Image (cartoon, rainbow, N blue to C red; front, side, top):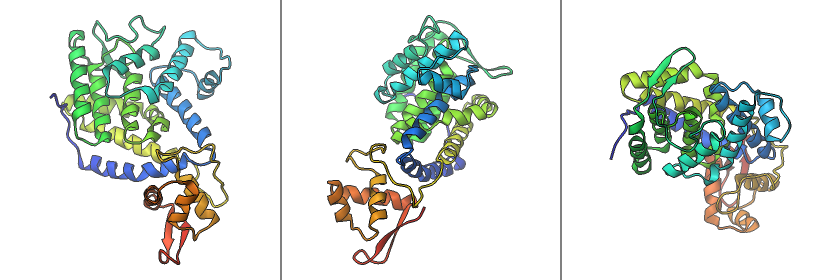
Length: 331
């Protein structure tokens, strides 16, 4: 099996630990009563930023208007790019990040009416350009199908952490540059899809927004990795962007005055959410795990798992004994 050349730095290991600690906090943030609005806002940021990196000049407000079905006066190609991106991200939950056929399907949607070979690998040479110069000349077109097949096999079979695999895949994908157009937006989408297998929240985390704000560093990381024949610099860069995004897009913390709207929260496979548990604790700090399980009609074991997530994320703690103590909401 082909293994891409990469090393994992001490910095990357630390970043993985920090990201893991932030994931549950962001997941709980998405369960607040304004969670739906936050997810929609982040989708707008994702689409706007990913296309802006590629030269689309529409504003966030204009992207939002297109999503809402409003008329926007702008170049037809730029409007088409937004409409295509909307349709592609709507496929998110149905795309398998480990299948080449799904990559081609997504590209076909992303590049509809923008290129004649949408959904097909390129037949000619291409390069990766920054705003100033050529960063990388991609491999010849005849090698693309094999290179992509090898990369997907590694992605599926490798045992490395998904955070690492997502970054390595992103870099290798841009190195191969398998399409005549749309490689940047597809690479960022595919990293998001891979991360979605780590946690569903990554569908609603606008990492592209951070990359857009740091485009020069993004291209420098690609260039440095290419020169070193090791994607470690790109791994470090992207992990830092993921961590920054998790920290900067959580909005306000949970407050004692807020109430959960059960119509808006995201439930896990047991049909429960951290938000429901916090609400029950807020109403009755002395409630037991068995009582929570009874109210939500689930097993005690599933409640224990959610309680552990809330405690690890620093949202609640237990004071006193299991029998006579009480729950305290910390934020």
